[in-house]
Length: 118
Image (cartoon, rainbow, N blue to C red; front, side, top):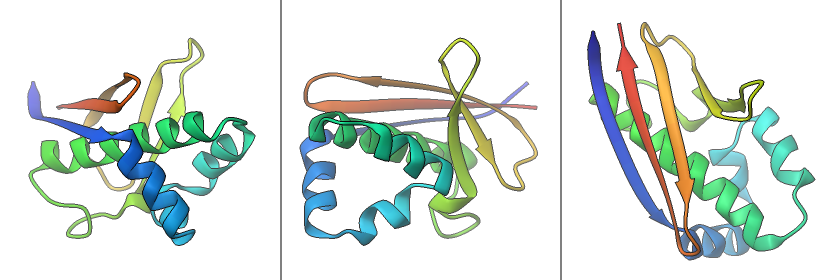
């Protein structure tokens, strides 16, 4: 049974500006595992796209849960890894539901959708 659905859309250049103006931005948004993946990327735009996708996915989870980031969990409680096939998988501390996530990018935007299943 579906328990929640969330979606978020973010401008990649907004994230890029955040990265350039505040190094703590990455520390706040990405987990250690995500930072390792981020640091392995070479192109600045690809790095911004990566962070934007994770930011959108984490915000989409907050919407699916019906809470905001910081109320019941933080960005650090949510980690996005890859399945064996390369699709994103979301791990959430203390979440009672199975979490499905999809992330997509265009040249200018990143979008993510999260579905919570009981």
